[in-house]
Image 1 (cartoon, rainbow, N blue to C red):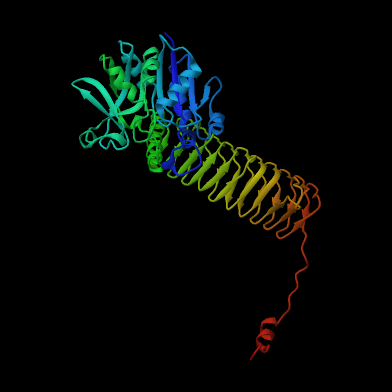
Image 2: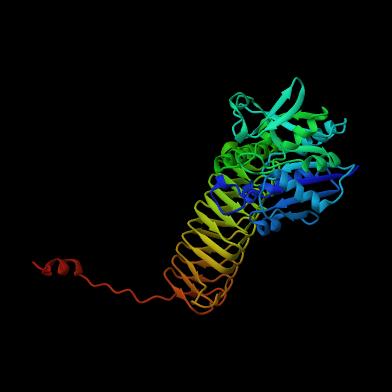
Length: 458
């Protein structure tokens, strides 16, 4: 028997109040629909069909290869979406058809496996349910004794049904042939003039062949229809991710204020302080301390490094290096072991050698700095002439005096010095001192003379 999986991802999500398709909103750095497709993929289905609608091309771009994508040109309800999917699949007689919503990122493949196991006991349909303290927004599960006989959508419930707390969570396993036959009888005779997939349950329940499996954790089946629900789901995913990392040996000062995306890699022994955000493909090596108040995306932080109050974008921080406080490492920054980028320093396309330091109030862009070099406070590589970018090369054991302007292209040789306040426009030979400033003048008695000047208007 083949397993066909249908992911419903066509809804606009009007309550999100955004033009972006709902399923593209991100949780832990990944779109909602990507989490769902991954959970379904772990079941090794013979085919995954994703039904798209609003923003179809945008949704297609995030889906993996091998997934069949079909468009629901008119959003006429979940029943209609499944009809569109079955048209693309073809004959499903004898197959099991799994239907899941595309906005439930907390789904675990284990829960879907439990649903399929129960369905395999012999049923036309098996639905996943949950008991919700506040069932608002969900279809209510109507039972006759232990038998499921109907699902009534929130918009159509009466006052008695509204008090039911067992809800359907838009997740089903169907006998393919039974599903196709039941869908043919579904009509859009409801308040929304839509074809509800839930109506199939009443049709299939007549012979008493509908089963139900309760979700172990109602939070797992939480869908996203509004910004506040998105935040709640993101918080739960954060707890799940952080809990996994802490069990793997990562220390977190405050897990509720630590944000680690799904693609981040951490090693045991990493220490994360509050308000740390690690995004994209960031990797942190054992012994590194990150935070508080660090945002790092697609960056690497080496063993024993210390990064705090800093922003890192596509940067590499070497072993035992120091970053911050209040530093910005832009793409292309590579810090060798033992180097330092300090307070209010910005770097871009900067290679900083082992043991070298840029401690204070400097901008180092398009620069290569050798080993054991010190860049004084307020120094800048003047790398842009308004049209082109140019490189600066600073050698080993160089001392750049405070407030030095290095006008690129320029090269400072090994063991060279620049005088504080200099504007360096020419290469400096190894071992030399380069000073470029006007001779200081002193006008004695200036203060007294100034006091004697008549004031304007006086």
